[in-house]
Figure 1 (cartoon, rainbow, N blue to C red):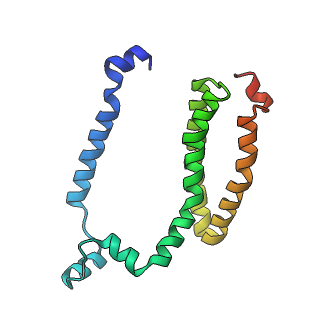
Figure 2 (cartoon, rainbow, N blue to C red):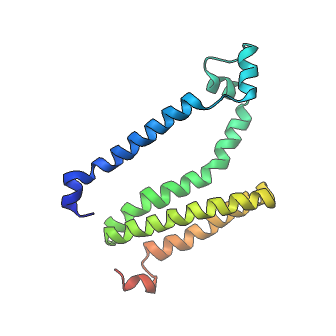
Length: 160
């Protein structure tokens, strides 16, 4: 989309999509049935007003463990999407279009691999697949950092 088209009418597209998602969310909220477990808890009057605080209070160790398990993917998300994109453009003067395309391809591949590894974790073992994933993330982050940040990739040289 050209800059003129975006300024004229294109900026409305995200709001339109958001509106459609809002309508879909309202429809789902109204028409989906509650789970049997929730209905049992509701009938027994054991629901709490602030379930998050009850969760943390009763399961603090598991909450901390869960946060630690999610931390590697959260850090990599921040690094590759937020930090590296600005760093590549500002520090090494990569073209913004190249950075956007690279990040888009990376997240598209991430979506595909999430489904693939989710399937593998059902077939093999969740702990093994997650462990290999975190190990791969740690091992591959440094080479990716030096390839992009230090500008030593010959294939990218011709695009830039």
